[in-house]
Image 1 (tube, rainbow, N blue to C red):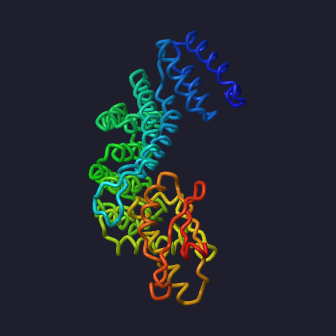
Image 2 (tube, rainbow, N blue to C red):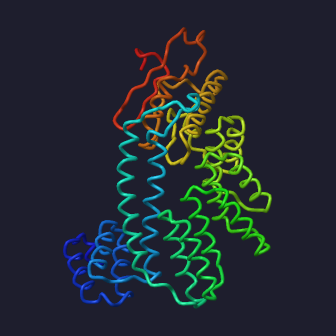
Image 3 (cartoon, one colour):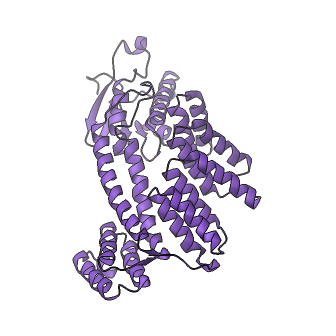
Length: 379
């Protein structure tokens, strides 16, 4: 770990290979080697360490899966965002029409390649992992095992590992249930996640962890089941749960993707009242519009962009703010192609009689999009 922290990767990996070859019979040493690389936040070193252990015919314990799966989960989340910005992006008024996005597709391709590499490594570890003992103190190791299967899309094996844990005399924990819910989300099984949620609350007689509700909502939103996403959020709040920004964003995205724009707007308005998703409107007075970091679907982002510009229009007409010459749009790289298309087709923020037909236009300034709301000469 110390060598990796000072960027001496070659020397660090040489030592990893040496130790892996000499200590191949000790799973705890394999765990320590991979864990040290994970602690240094060096993904390439983690992959190399796993390969070194496997080449030496070493094995891992379930506890050793946790840091690797944690890093893989981050890669998976990044890939999910990249896919959302790629060729799957559809404008809110296109109703399913193909909208190619070259920049987003490149990001999605890169993310996909990285994701596949991590999937292969986690799958290889699972093929060479020792089952935890039937000890209540090792419940976290069982949860890590369930999580590992789930994150690589092996839903059946995840549930089988969970059943194996119960058969070994280890009681189910919130951590294990959350791992199962996450597995359902990765596998695109929102209804199964919803059944798991109902089972957890029936067994415990209490409100299930927020993470499980979040995974049901995320799985439903990703699967295009807006009804289930909205109903799950409503049920969570009715039980006294505090909805997170991610929950609001996912339900809003699901509703917008289903062209239920009035409901999506209502969710966005409520989220802003609670201090969430406020970025798009806070900078209008100063001529900038923040759309990055919202984690919304393209349809929901389009809705936000449209409503933010309409808000600017109303404020200008009411003489609350001056019409800015330009509006700089800050955005995530994956959303760039889609936002460019939306802005180019956007109506002027002022009525034609006021602007006398002057049409706004779009300019690319470095990595930013600049939307000129006045004439080209004035800009």
